[in-house]
Length: 239
Length: 332
Image 1 (cartoon, each protein chain N blue to C red):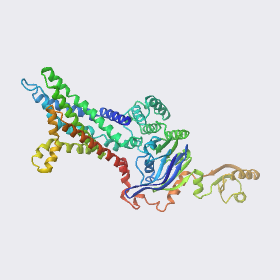
Image 2 (image 1 turned 180 degrees about the horizontal axis):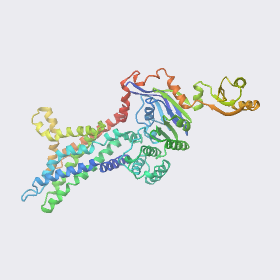
Image 3 (image 1 turned 60 degrees about the vertical axis):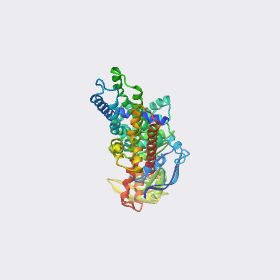
Image 4 (image 1 turned 90 degrees about the horizontal axis):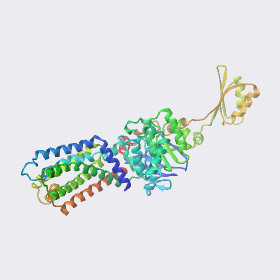
């Protein structure tokens, strides 16, 4: 536990020291800000909700979250610090969990930036805070899934750019195209794509429904990806 | 303190080390020598539990590196060859982080950071980002990190590479001081320094031990008797005859140069006293008397050249292209 926290702290420090951290946060806030503004949520007679921002967020997150995670393990491999961590009695699991927690803290800070929109909205209207809370929970969970997948991608390569592509492209397929693909499919494959269609789960959260199905899906995928990352890290030392 | 028995490590079918057996006693400083790619780093990585051996056993401070790996790791301070550090962190931040990983609580951490910073001469850079430090300072930060948790065993992979001559000497002195409380195993290509620092050497070549022992033992193993050379004034023939008559002299040669006779004797160093007494009796002036011991460098080169395929670069032996592979992977 102590080691996990130490790894997390160090990773956060590096994220906030490096330009990547700020570029990612700024990019995310600028784009969601534009959506907020162009989405005309502030128009008279429009429903007071962050619907537009929430609907757009998963698309953006497929790009942003892998960027947060891409250096996590790749950079340790590349610079050789992986060796000094392992030989300092850090276990593979502690390393992976520390990286994941750091990514989640960073992501949460970034997401918290959008609370400003909600506050603005509260100044001029009365948004449904229950729905907003459920939506944020949904975004946190989807971020957790993306982050664990990003860490898995990073555990596979010492090249940050490759790690980003490996982490982003499958998630893009899932978020951008799953809904379009699913109508073309038949039988078992259709069932499968339907099951992993993230948007389906997220939409429930956006309606204010925190379902067991949704929570379990995101937590289970997170656990799976983290488990696989630990195994990948472990296998690197056996070769 | 370090026990290695029949240790082998293969990367695929490439033999990195094979059948290594050696031990390092408590408080010893042992030099681990060999040409590049001989398997030194591979051996260190097994000892530090970075990767498991293919066969054989190794234990550090009584803990098996495989079965009891976490406890073995806690006993070892390791300075990897490439001195990996986080360039964006400040030295103090980095050492705090490492202290946490080593399980030091806050007061102990701060105290140890102060101590190792003083020991390794990094106090003046302690608040600077590591990325801005020179190679010499980075090396010392790596050394400070290895010492941080006061480990019983120190494994230093080329601790002096990239340092200037003054720093090399300082580091050598530091390592000798450390031997009082730590068992040290180090690798280096700067053999005179190894000779001055280490009590014992293990020489490996192509993954196998080719010689080990103290300097004196190694000198003996190479089979060349020690030599004594004298520079004196006296008739060449008389000198030679007199020298040959001394006890323990197996061979003598003489040559006259610039009015001085240079004599080289194959004999134990204690022939010196007899020789000086002889010169006194004969009234020959002596300018110089010197023991010509075989230096470590010479021993090292002979050990390596004595191997059957020594002249060939290792990459041309059995597995040509494989050579780069483990290195790349290891860094990955």
